[in-house]
Image (cartoon, rainbow, N blue to C red; front, side):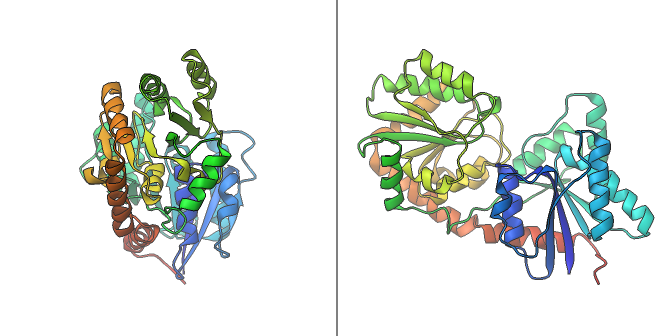
Length: 377
């Protein structure tokens, strides 16, 4: 039995956290997979259905210091003797690696092996931090990214050799996310939409990097030509008040809704006529995969791994920050039902063939096995 510990700040709603839950729930029989939450369990913890999984919550994080994080990691590794520690980005990598190396010294074994996954946001504000990250990437046992594009950007940012990072594309639950006409009618009615309304929807944290002001500006321009269009934001974040104020300034409050954070994304997404994402930077947007699997045509910025998961017949890619391109792209979806339908079918087929959770899980667990000799009982 190979024992793996994922390290996260919490299992709050997010793409990274959702991916960890999926990996746990689909773990093979020869793996024991647990998760360490350094701050709190989070909203997604209840979605863990794998009965063998332990959700460990650190009792040492009375502050957000590296030392407290180190103690949380060290106690979990000492008590449970994991073979692999899988950290997720800077917030867990440094303290996790230090704790794992300490455990190795005390046990005289090369375990736990240290794997780190990068999901789209990396911190390189200062020379000191860049040097620390560079050293960690070179010293640990494995580096993963959610897209090849992100891996190349990381290698360039930290002056690392090519192929330092191994990409594993995210997968989507095609049983949970799938077209459903009954849910479409139900949730459009609940949201107050008529069947003749054209709903432009997006799902994600309301944060600066998503560049949602651009979407609002384009929607305001489209609204002058199309009286039946609606804009739906599903998610919450520190930019919500600013976005609501921008909507108010365009006098669009009756056409734009903010749901806040929702737990039933698979159901609410059915209300969309088109999914859009205007991010300036991404690793690999899970919401894009979910929209594709739901049979919803998508128009997203060509950043991160979007091109790797959505070939051109399966959706529309556009340059980040390009308002004119977004306007024209959305206009085509609004005016052409046949284009919407053909794009959605291409996306649905591509996801089912290449981007299921099962495909993703197989790659992760094969990677763990190939890390090297693991001392298992």
